[in-house]
Length: 247
Ligand code: G3P
Ligand code: MG
Image 1: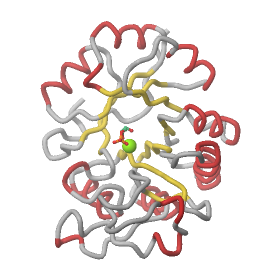
Image 2 (image 1 turned 135 degrees about the vertical axis):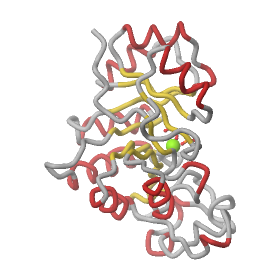
Image 3 (image 1 turned 90 degrees about the vertical axis):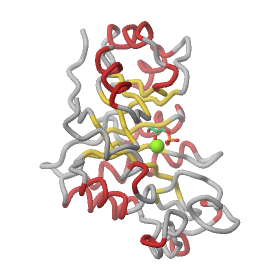
Image 4 (image 1 turned 30 degrees about the vertical axis):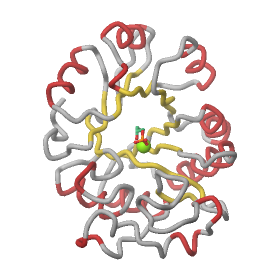
């Protein structure tokens, strides 16, 4: 039996898609300004074990200079400029903690797809910390978030500390053992790279009763095709082209 997808269908990728510096509060504001109350973002641990929003383990792209997230403590990370790389309007935009982003999303009634993005070697610790904080800060009147990760180990750790927070397993290509893996995680969904999805593989997942989520869908034509194949939801960088009510 196919599950009824209980989550939003169109989600702003990394906060505000390609219109703002990813994984910042400015990105969340940008998503909101485009009418999005559903957001995906990436969470990593600082050296001292605090969840912060970040995609890359190494500095150099969204954070200037050399260095890395897992060898930098949160006090320093949260002073770092995560906006300049994007453009002068965002100079001084800081790296936010996950805690601050949860508070922001709660205040603005934004649903969260929290991608657990562990640095190499700290998969279990990251899954544990992110899931524990998600659970601890969840309020009764808040939409239940969806945790996702490419790291099976991180998701297993999340399952252990917060079994009631739903999980989705992220994959680039759907592996042969996908169903066994989802069952082991007790996951509600498979999150796949849309470029490798076909109508046949989509049908296999949905017929097995799992939710199917795609990243990252940036044209209306492709979004329509995926929805026709039974895809339940997707995230997009083009929040200016694909609105929250598209599906
Ligand atoms: O969660 C979907 C998507 O964000 C996964 O890829 O690299 O953008 O985090 P990435
Ligand atoms: Mg992501």
